[in-house]
Image (cartoon, one colour):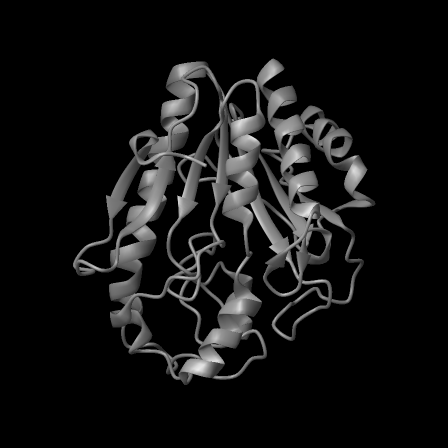
Length: 281
Protein backbone atom coordinates (compact mmCIF):
# COMPACT_ATOMS: atom_id res chain seq x y z
CA UNK A 1 0.00 0.00 0.00
CA UNK A 2 1.05 3.60 -0.40
CA UNK A 3 2.89 5.46 2.28
CA UNK A 4 1.72 8.94 3.26
CA UNK A 5 4.75 10.71 1.81
CA UNK A 6 3.71 9.60 -1.69
CA UNK A 7 0.36 11.39 -1.44
CA UNK A 8 -0.70 14.98 -1.97
CA UNK A 9 -3.75 15.71 0.20
CA UNK A 10 -6.39 18.40 -0.13
CA UNK A 11 -8.81 19.00 2.72
CA UNK A 12 -12.44 19.95 2.22
CA UNK A 13 -13.28 23.34 3.73
CA UNK A 14 -14.54 23.55 7.30
CA UNK A 15 -14.86 19.83 7.85
CA UNK A 16 -13.37 19.75 11.31
CA UNK A 17 -10.40 17.86 12.68
CA UNK A 18 -11.89 14.36 12.45
CA UNK A 19 -12.96 14.62 8.84
CA UNK A 20 -9.65 14.21 7.02
CA UNK A 21 -8.76 14.90 3.39
CA UNK A 22 -11.53 15.03 0.81
CA UNK A 23 -9.47 13.39 -1.93
CA UNK A 24 -6.02 11.95 -2.38
CA UNK A 25 -3.58 12.20 -5.27
CA UNK A 26 -1.05 9.40 -4.98
CA UNK A 27 2.09 10.17 -6.94
CA UNK A 28 3.23 7.75 -9.60
CA UNK A 29 6.22 7.67 -11.90
CA UNK A 30 6.74 11.07 -13.57
CA UNK A 31 6.91 9.29 -16.94
CA UNK A 32 3.53 7.55 -16.58
CA UNK A 33 0.52 9.06 -18.38
CA UNK A 34 -1.91 6.82 -16.47
CA UNK A 35 -4.28 8.16 -13.85
CA UNK A 36 -6.31 5.56 -11.94
CA UNK A 37 -9.45 7.34 -10.79
CA UNK A 38 -11.35 5.80 -7.83
CA UNK A 39 -14.44 7.95 -7.20
CA UNK A 40 -16.87 5.62 -5.40
CA UNK A 41 -14.81 3.50 -3.02
CA UNK A 42 -15.14 5.50 0.20
CA UNK A 43 -17.68 4.93 2.97
CA UNK A 44 -16.93 8.20 4.81
CA UNK A 45 -19.85 10.54 5.52
CA UNK A 46 -18.78 13.57 7.59
CA UNK A 47 -20.95 14.37 10.62
CA UNK A 48 -22.18 17.65 9.19
CA UNK A 49 -23.37 15.83 6.05
CA UNK A 50 -24.82 12.93 8.05
CA UNK A 51 -27.06 15.34 9.91
CA UNK A 52 -28.85 16.21 6.67
CA UNK A 53 -29.68 12.61 5.73
CA UNK A 54 -33.11 11.17 6.50
CA UNK A 55 -32.05 7.56 7.17
CA UNK A 56 -31.51 6.12 10.64
CA UNK A 57 -28.10 4.62 11.37
CA UNK A 58 -29.01 1.04 10.43
CA UNK A 59 -30.62 2.08 7.15
CA UNK A 60 -27.67 4.32 6.32
CA UNK A 61 -25.22 1.47 6.95
CA UNK A 62 -27.18 -0.76 4.55
CA UNK A 63 -27.29 2.00 1.96
CA UNK A 64 -23.54 2.59 2.20
CA UNK A 65 -22.97 -1.14 1.65
CA UNK A 66 -25.08 -1.06 -1.51
CA UNK A 67 -23.82 2.19 -3.04
CA UNK A 68 -20.08 1.84 -2.35
CA UNK A 69 -17.68 0.29 -4.87
CA UNK A 70 -16.06 -1.63 -2.05
CA UNK A 71 -12.29 -2.21 -2.15
CA UNK A 72 -11.78 -0.47 -5.48
CA UNK A 73 -9.11 1.67 -3.77
CA UNK A 74 -7.27 -1.53 -2.92
CA UNK A 75 -7.56 -2.86 -6.46
CA UNK A 76 -6.08 0.37 -7.79
CA UNK A 77 -3.32 0.47 -5.18
CA UNK A 78 -2.31 -3.14 -5.79
CA UNK A 79 -2.29 -2.60 -9.53
CA UNK A 80 -0.18 0.53 -9.12
CA UNK A 81 2.32 -1.37 -7.00
CA UNK A 82 2.56 -4.22 -9.50
CA UNK A 83 2.85 -2.16 -12.69
CA UNK A 84 6.39 -1.73 -14.08
CA UNK A 85 5.85 2.03 -14.35
CA UNK A 86 3.78 3.19 -11.40
CA UNK A 87 0.57 5.02 -12.42
CA UNK A 88 -0.88 7.96 -10.57
CA UNK A 89 -4.01 7.52 -8.45
CA UNK A 90 -6.77 9.99 -7.70
CA UNK A 91 -8.95 8.66 -4.89
CA UNK A 92 -12.16 10.11 -3.49
CA UNK A 93 -12.09 9.98 0.31
CA UNK A 94 -15.81 10.72 0.66
CA UNK A 95 -18.81 8.51 0.11
CA UNK A 96 -20.78 9.30 -3.01
CA UNK A 97 -23.65 10.01 -0.61
CA UNK A 98 -21.83 13.29 0.15
CA UNK A 99 -21.58 14.28 -3.52
CA UNK A 100 -21.04 12.16 -6.59
CA UNK A 101 -18.07 13.72 -8.42
CA UNK A 102 -18.87 11.87 -11.64
CA UNK A 103 -22.31 13.36 -12.17
CA UNK A 104 -23.07 16.54 -14.05
CA UNK A 105 -24.03 19.14 -11.41
CA UNK A 106 -27.03 20.37 -13.41
CA UNK A 107 -29.91 19.31 -15.67
CA UNK A 108 -27.57 17.51 -18.09
CA UNK A 109 -27.41 14.60 -15.63
CA UNK A 110 -29.89 11.84 -16.51
CA UNK A 111 -29.66 10.29 -13.04
CA UNK A 112 -31.46 13.30 -11.62
CA UNK A 113 -34.61 11.49 -12.77
CA UNK A 114 -34.15 9.00 -9.92
CA UNK A 115 -32.82 11.46 -7.36
CA UNK A 116 -29.17 10.70 -8.04
CA UNK A 117 -27.66 13.81 -9.54
CA UNK A 118 -24.49 15.24 -8.06
CA UNK A 119 -26.27 15.46 -4.69
CA UNK A 120 -28.43 12.39 -4.07
CA UNK A 121 -31.95 12.80 -2.73
CA UNK A 122 -32.96 9.14 -3.13
CA UNK A 123 -31.44 5.81 -2.14
CA UNK A 124 -30.64 2.78 -4.30
CA UNK A 125 -34.24 1.63 -3.63
CA UNK A 126 -35.62 5.12 -4.45
CA UNK A 127 -36.52 5.88 -0.84
CA UNK A 128 -36.01 9.45 0.47
CA UNK A 129 -32.40 10.20 1.40
CA UNK A 130 -32.54 14.01 1.63
CA UNK A 131 -35.36 16.53 1.43
CA UNK A 132 -36.19 17.50 -2.14
CA UNK A 133 -34.76 19.89 -3.09
CA UNK A 134 -31.89 19.54 -0.60
CA UNK A 135 -31.37 22.74 1.35
CA UNK A 136 -27.59 22.23 1.44
CA UNK A 137 -27.08 21.35 -2.25
CA UNK A 138 -25.21 24.55 -3.14
CA UNK A 139 -23.04 24.24 -0.05
CA UNK A 140 -22.16 20.62 -0.81
CA UNK A 141 -21.31 21.39 -4.42
CA UNK A 142 -19.07 24.28 -3.34
CA UNK A 143 -17.39 22.37 -0.54
CA UNK A 144 -16.85 19.02 -2.26
CA UNK A 145 -17.82 18.83 -5.94
CA UNK A 146 -16.04 21.91 -7.28
CA UNK A 147 -12.70 21.39 -5.46
CA UNK A 148 -12.66 17.73 -6.50
CA UNK A 149 -13.29 18.59 -10.16
CA UNK A 150 -10.60 21.27 -10.09
CA UNK A 151 -8.05 18.93 -8.52
CA UNK A 152 -8.79 16.14 -11.00
CA UNK A 153 -8.42 18.63 -13.84
CA UNK A 154 -5.03 19.70 -12.50
CA UNK A 155 -3.96 16.05 -12.22
CA UNK A 156 -4.83 15.48 -15.89
CA UNK A 157 -3.07 18.70 -16.91
CA UNK A 158 0.03 17.57 -15.04
CA UNK A 159 0.10 14.27 -16.96
CA UNK A 160 -0.30 16.15 -20.24
CA UNK A 161 2.54 18.51 -19.37
CA UNK A 162 4.82 15.67 -18.25
CA UNK A 163 4.12 13.04 -20.91
CA UNK A 164 2.09 14.66 -23.70
CA UNK A 165 -0.92 12.47 -22.98
CA UNK A 166 -3.21 11.44 -20.14
CA UNK A 167 -5.00 8.10 -19.82
CA UNK A 168 -7.78 8.01 -17.23
CA UNK A 169 -8.86 4.56 -16.07
CA UNK A 170 -12.01 4.94 -14.01
CA UNK A 171 -12.18 2.09 -11.45
CA UNK A 172 -15.70 1.01 -10.43
CA UNK A 173 -17.78 -2.01 -9.49
CA UNK A 174 -21.47 -2.87 -9.71
CA UNK A 175 -23.79 -5.39 -8.01
CA UNK A 176 -24.51 -8.73 -9.61
CA UNK A 177 -28.25 -8.02 -9.33
CA UNK A 178 -29.72 -4.75 -10.53
CA UNK A 179 -30.85 -2.24 -7.92
CA UNK A 180 -34.03 -0.19 -8.38
CA UNK A 181 -32.17 3.07 -9.05
CA UNK A 182 -30.53 1.75 -12.22
CA UNK A 183 -31.93 3.32 -15.38
CA UNK A 184 -30.53 0.57 -17.61
CA UNK A 185 -30.61 -2.41 -15.28
CA UNK A 186 -32.38 -4.84 -17.61
CA UNK A 187 -29.40 -5.39 -19.92
CA UNK A 188 -26.53 -7.86 -19.66
CA UNK A 189 -24.41 -7.82 -16.49
CA UNK A 190 -21.07 -9.28 -17.58
CA UNK A 191 -18.15 -9.95 -15.22
CA UNK A 192 -16.40 -6.96 -16.81
CA UNK A 193 -18.12 -3.92 -18.30
CA UNK A 194 -16.00 -1.41 -20.15
CA UNK A 195 -17.51 2.07 -20.34
CA UNK A 196 -16.49 4.11 -23.36
CA UNK A 197 -16.77 7.54 -24.91
CA UNK A 198 -16.78 8.02 -28.69
CA UNK A 199 -14.30 10.91 -28.48
CA UNK A 200 -12.03 9.82 -25.62
CA UNK A 201 -11.85 6.01 -25.88
CA UNK A 202 -9.61 5.01 -28.79
CA UNK A 203 -9.84 1.53 -30.27
CA UNK A 204 -6.29 0.77 -29.16
CA UNK A 205 -7.10 1.39 -25.49
CA UNK A 206 -10.22 -0.73 -25.74
CA UNK A 207 -8.29 -3.61 -27.30
CA UNK A 208 -5.67 -3.48 -24.55
CA UNK A 209 -8.41 -3.58 -21.90
CA UNK A 210 -10.12 -6.55 -23.53
CA UNK A 211 -6.86 -8.49 -23.51
CA UNK A 212 -5.96 -7.55 -19.95
CA UNK A 213 -9.32 -8.47 -18.43
CA UNK A 214 -10.08 -11.56 -20.53
CA UNK A 215 -9.03 -13.91 -17.68
CA UNK A 216 -11.88 -12.55 -15.52
CA UNK A 217 -14.64 -13.71 -17.88
CA UNK A 218 -16.94 -12.23 -20.47
CA UNK A 219 -16.49 -8.55 -21.35
CA UNK A 220 -19.17 -6.22 -22.70
CA UNK A 221 -19.23 -2.55 -23.62
CA UNK A 222 -21.41 0.04 -21.90
CA UNK A 223 -23.74 -2.39 -20.14
CA UNK A 224 -25.15 -2.03 -17.57
CA UNK A 225 -23.26 1.28 -17.19
CA UNK A 226 -21.95 3.46 -19.99
CA UNK A 227 -19.50 6.27 -20.50
CA UNK A 228 -16.37 7.32 -18.68
CA UNK A 229 -15.08 10.29 -16.68
CA UNK A 230 -13.20 13.14 -18.32
CA UNK A 231 -12.84 16.60 -16.71
CA UNK A 232 -15.10 19.11 -18.41
CA UNK A 233 -12.15 21.29 -19.45
CA UNK A 234 -10.96 18.46 -21.67
CA UNK A 235 -14.23 16.71 -22.50
CA UNK A 236 -14.88 16.58 -26.22
CA UNK A 237 -11.97 18.94 -26.87
CA UNK A 238 -8.60 17.32 -26.25
CA UNK A 239 -7.84 13.97 -27.87
CA UNK A 240 -4.61 13.74 -25.88
CA UNK A 241 -6.88 12.75 -22.99
CA UNK A 242 -8.15 9.20 -23.37
CA UNK A 243 -10.40 7.45 -20.89
CA UNK A 244 -12.00 4.13 -20.10
CA UNK A 245 -14.38 3.09 -17.32
CA UNK A 246 -13.76 -0.27 -15.70
CA UNK A 247 -16.86 -1.77 -14.06
CA UNK A 248 -16.22 -5.07 -12.27
CA UNK A 249 -19.27 -7.09 -11.35
CA UNK A 250 -18.88 -7.36 -7.60
CA UNK A 251 -19.14 -11.12 -7.30
CA UNK A 252 -15.97 -11.29 -9.42
CA UNK A 253 -13.97 -10.11 -6.41
CA UNK A 254 -16.39 -9.90 -3.45
CA UNK A 255 -18.77 -11.96 -1.41
CA UNK A 256 -21.39 -9.28 -1.82
CA UNK A 257 -21.86 -6.69 -0.66
CA UNK A 258 -18.42 -5.90 0.79
CA UNK A 259 -16.25 -8.93 1.69
CA UNK A 260 -13.29 -9.50 -0.66
CA UNK A 261 -12.24 -12.95 -1.85
CA UNK A 262 -9.29 -14.13 -3.94
CA UNK A 263 -10.79 -12.61 -7.07
CA UNK A 264 -9.57 -9.23 -5.83
CA UNK A 265 -5.99 -10.26 -6.56
CA UNK A 266 -6.97 -11.39 -10.05
CA UNK A 267 -8.72 -8.08 -10.69
CA UNK A 268 -5.72 -6.09 -9.50
CA UNK A 269 -3.39 -8.19 -11.65
CA UNK A 270 -5.57 -7.55 -14.71
CA UNK A 271 -5.57 -3.82 -14.06
CA UNK A 272 -1.77 -3.89 -13.65
CA UNK A 273 -1.49 -5.61 -17.05
CA UNK A 274 -3.59 -2.90 -18.64
CA UNK A 275 -1.50 -0.14 -17.04
CA UNK A 276 1.71 -1.78 -18.23
CA UNK A 277 0.45 -2.01 -21.82
CA UNK A 278 -0.78 1.57 -21.82
CA UNK A 279 2.57 2.79 -20.54
CA UNK A 280 4.33 0.92 -23.34
CA UNK A 281 2.20 2.78 -25.87
